[in-house]
Image (tube, rainbow, N blue to C red; front, top):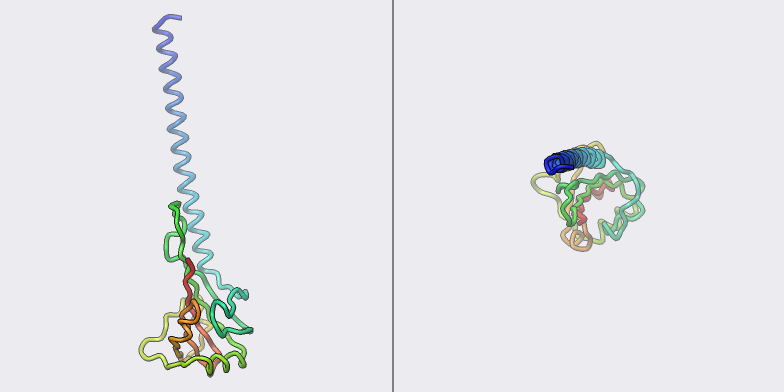
Length: 166
């Protein structure tokens, strides 16, 4: 094999390797883009889901008791599909229909003051579970005792909470 033919063969082999590497990088970039789109779709579906399971306890929201009904959602306020290391904050909001005995106990355990000004923002998926005419009350002592912000209507045995989990 002459020097010229050897150089031609080596150049051709190098060209094939470079083309394969570029194609692999392109394919990897496309699959990452598809993965992010799939992740974003999964996150959107998670955020839209109204849950009714009994995940929340007195440890999370003091005085919640053995509630007969709950509707709650999760929100990912940061970019949940990021590949960067670190925690992903999750926000939760729930509307809870308390048992009458638990509502009475909650009303007497903490000092509740009527909410003046704007009512709390109820997430769109949960607004159908909050009846018109709700008169929310707040308790700084209750919020300090648990990990959630709580609004409470003792007459309707209704509780709205917002919690953050990192």
